[in-house]
Every structure is written in C-alpha cells, then in structure tokens.
Image (cartoon, rainbow, N blue to C red):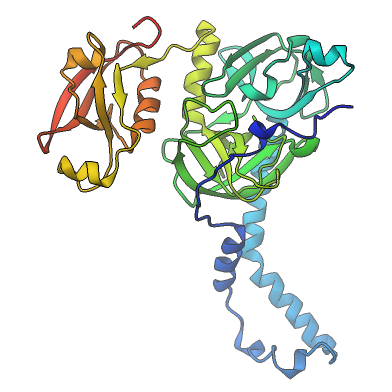
Length: 395
C-alpha cells in the first residue's frame, strides 16, 4: 500500500508557526462588492417584496438578473485573467511520485512513496524540472515517476539537489516540452495576487488563488530537517500535501516562487503556505546545472540570534534591525575587512538587513570572491566597509 497521497510531517507542516495576519480571497470579494453600485430602483429590494415566502414578479426577476450581469463584470474580468494565467501555466507543471522505500522497509514488504510537483524550466538548450529536494530525497532515479501535463511519462536523465535550500532540478528529454516563464521575486509585495499550481493529494494540475500574505519568513521549524537557508514568501493560496515543488505564479503567468511547506495543525491547508522565492531558487538551480554543486560565500562571523531591543538600545539603535556580530574568526573575510565584535551589519550588497538569518541568506547568494559594500553600525554611527567574501567550503 502506498502513501503517495500523504507527505511526512516535514512535508506537511511547520511545527510551530508564528501568529500571522493574513488577508484572503474573501476580503477581495468584499472589496469588489463595495465597488458595485446598486441602482436606486432596487434600493428597497431587500424589504418585504423579497421575503422568501413571497414570489417575485417575472419582470422584476428579469431586471434583477440583468442587474447581476452588470454588477458581476468586475469579477468576470478577474476570472478571465486567472483562466489565462492557469492555461499558460498548467502544461509546465509536472506530477512527481518517488519511491523512497529503504532496503529494510522493502525487505518487510513495505513500500513508501512520496508525491509532489515540479515545474519545467529551460536552461540553455536543456529542459529541467525544478522541485523541492525533499520530494525526491532518498529515491533512486529509476524509482522516480514524472508525469507531464499532457499525461506522458518521462524518466529522469540527471538529478541534482541542494538540501540546505530544499531546491532540486531533474533533467528530462522529450519532444514538445513546454517551459514556464520565469519572473522575479525581488519586488513581490504583500497583497500581490498569486496562483499555486500542483498536485495536492495526487490531484494533478490543480490551481488555487490567493495573495502574498508576507515576505521574508525565516527561522521556521520544518520538522526534523530544518532548512538552513530560508527566505520564504507566505501565501494564503491553498497549498496542500502534494503541492510541494509546484510553482507559485503571478498574474502575468510568471513563476515567482516554488511552493514548499504549510503551517497546519491538521495536515491540510489552513491558509498559511510558504514558497521559496524564485530569485533564490534560480541562483541555486543555475549553479547545480552549470557545476553540479552549490558554492556559498561566507564572512567568518558569529551572529547574535537574540538581538533584542534592549541590546540594540545599548548601541544607540532605535530598534533591533541588522545582524549583531558576537565573534569574528581570525583571517576570515570579515576580519580582513576590519569587521569587529559588536558591529551591527545594517546593509549588505545593497540589501537592508533585517536580522541574522537575513544576512546569512544574503551572503550565501553572493558569488565567491565578490567585493561587497556593507554598512555597519559602530560607535553609534553608520560606517561603510568593503568585504571580499570567501568560499564557505574552501574558506
């Protein structure tokens, strides 16, 4: 008996989600309805004439139907837009089933399958499926089944993964492949409309609609295998087990994220889903395709994960923004640039730093050897330094 309709706790939920304020589709409908002007002729239509036990005259019913047709135009326009975005996206989405049965489980006659989604992208002249690393983790290539949007099945030609970011790419070869259009996650804002496409509970080519509820979600507890690099987009578009690895789409039909996890107490969608920003995912995927591995930069510092308002006030900062440095490794890139214990990095390579996790992500995305300008807070004033970032592995 397989379990491809259910993912493990890591795939299904964030174990301790923070309390978040979300703005959902119902609110959108409420806003649109306030834009609909009811003609004065029917201002009293909610009175006794429309009581359930009193019939409505045919002429009045016809007039009300005509009124609905006019008033629903705004919603029909949005619906047509969503139909177009979904029509362009669905052929690029792949259903993935992976047999992750261990030798011990197989010897006991137990088969364990995981299900997820992926999106077809083009790198040069080659086609790859981008998905989550956890969707195929532990599965041999011959035990991964890939089903295209038109029902064809293809086999993996090459599999490349980066577990610390939960990004994976699978090379495929087949005629008439359709690649998705890549957007940018750099300018995503709270309130942007998005669609999530995937195979929740094995129901392939499913599309849900919502908005971006938040950006820059970090320090989320993802079961036993917490991701090291997090910078999630949060959305209230319904994401369920099986959506993992599928694309998050903007209204232009562009991929802006890769759906990864949900915060849930039931295992199903509760309106809090998380997606890897596509800019981050593409940075990793490009390295995997070009070199077969991901090389990350590093500074050589230890950061304060408990940078509280009290600590920030001692440095003259009005609030705990930035990354507070508690130690500097000798001969590291940070040490060579003059970074000192007690400094607070406020900006790195043009990006305003929110906290320690944010800095870790930004450094990891910078090419090794790049000279980066950073703004630090020292002696109660900002200062500029240049840092030549090193190789996390080779230093």
